[in-house]
Image 1 (spheres, rainbow, N blue to C red):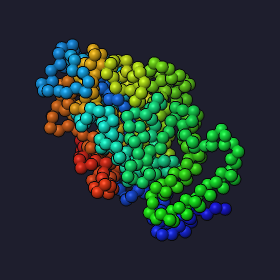
Image 2: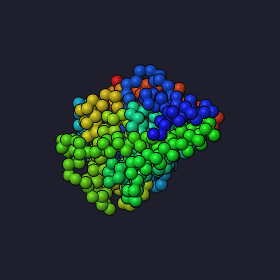
Image 3: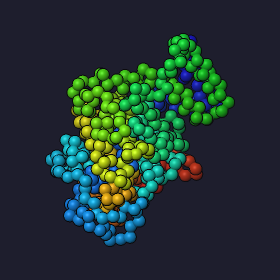
Image 4: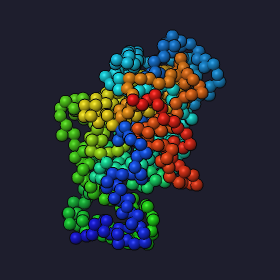
Length: 480
């Protein structure tokens, strides 16, 4: 029998074994780099990212003034530089709005399914970013910085709080089923944090949700004994390599990833087995029709199916101890648009994306509330920037980094409220001097998880780095 990893680490010498063993013991008991700074209101996070730039004025931020001035020349009262040529006439919301819930929140009819849970949601309509460039704005939302080389938010949470289940990753990412959004895996990279904190990709809508978890079709000759022998040899080589390179965290991360993969061979298939769900739950997520065929033309059934599978997988992973689940809608490629970057036609692009998203996300919130998980799970819906209230090419909208919507629900969030507001056209914060920044949202999420965002730091490049850079304030109005 091969020695356990703990025993091998003890024998590795040169201090590596002791450090790695301490880290391993922390991981096994679910702790992160330190105890929470204060009593947490939440334990886990679902981060919903609409890649491409979802239109606030067509989905959540009701602007009667746009309806009144539809087709009139746009006048912002200031010099505005468009990303492309999106300073055409004012363009009314492309769907009618209606009041929902006890709070009376006005929602577009294309996201009307969220009306069933709107009293659990807190909307922020005065979000403001720094750039109208997709890659930079996506980095800012996902990592807190506009440039590559910084850890994703899920990596920070994994690093700070550790895992709740040693058989599954702490940070799971579900990309759009058509491909990656801007920056690809760099959005969930661990960067200068230990590599085991990077996001693990799952694709619940695929026949093979986890790539390379099991041997391929040519690996049938590998029986249990051969597999164990190979892993044992690999372990001995790793320990020998580690003994010669004390303090090399990359190898420790690689060892941890191999061991996690072995444990996931048992835990992950069960977590993603939807056959264990009741017909009522499958119907809730829109998965009672069988698999949708993913055609060339984007459609709401495809979006409901893809997002429904991701959201149901998220609930199953959360209840099994996954700390942070990130779900992406929209990718970088394809035409007609397969993302939220609706320069040409808002109705064509946003319609099926928004309806499919709203069906699935409403189901997730209902299901989390039904199971009690919503009490200590934060759900965040965001996008890299919004879209202009003026038109582009008659039916589209250009990028708008000055004003967009983010909403939150769940653990510690006061539901049924709206913060902001934006101005009469949804272009920017009504109070130009006090918009809400992504740093504020990040600081608030960390606060609800029991972390002081100013104290979760790592020295890198000669500076104490943190998710919120040198910014960020907890948004007290959001707290229940």
